[in-house]
Image (cartoon, rainbow, N blue to C red; front, side, top):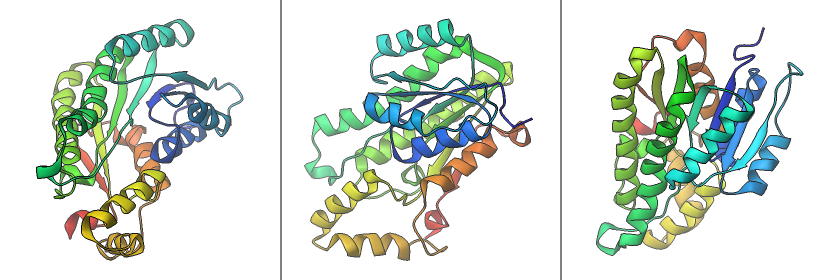
Length: 259
């Protein structure tokens, strides 16, 4: 029997990148995966890439704006009707922009907090009644939550909030034997990183190639993080072996958080 066979996993922000890799990991481990994203075409592409090793898994894509309470509640009503309950909640939806604090706009601040922090709160709150006792919640945080960056003050603050919410939720959900943890990826090779490299190059007056090489140089293990590296750790956090682990932030950064 596969590790998560017969379970239902709900994941936000899985139209690409880290989220897609995690969704694929859940499927390989035997879970039925619900991919929730504003990018419906991307979510459907993720679903099309998911394995079905048990032959009984029911994967699905749904549209979800994690910043809207009504959307989150409606999504969970749909899940209840079609799946009954949730075993794994993966809050992965996230955005970024890059600006020094003195130049940061209120709109950028709100955008980052609404998706990265408020979204985790709203989805978790909506999913709570459907989560099985003994289930798992995993939040995608960031190395920015343990190592600040002057070009990401708003993003850093939003991820510190995710870290704090993870710890508070771990205490609240412990009574139901639901564990709540987060992963803190480092310099992950994704389309989001491709955009950030261009932004950072402009802010620092260097080339994108120099920025990318800088990320590698700051990582003791000598390479960028891949989405699959993060997915492997999430796979552990939803495994029986992680049943006594809660309120933790796991760095998946190749040591970049240490430099």
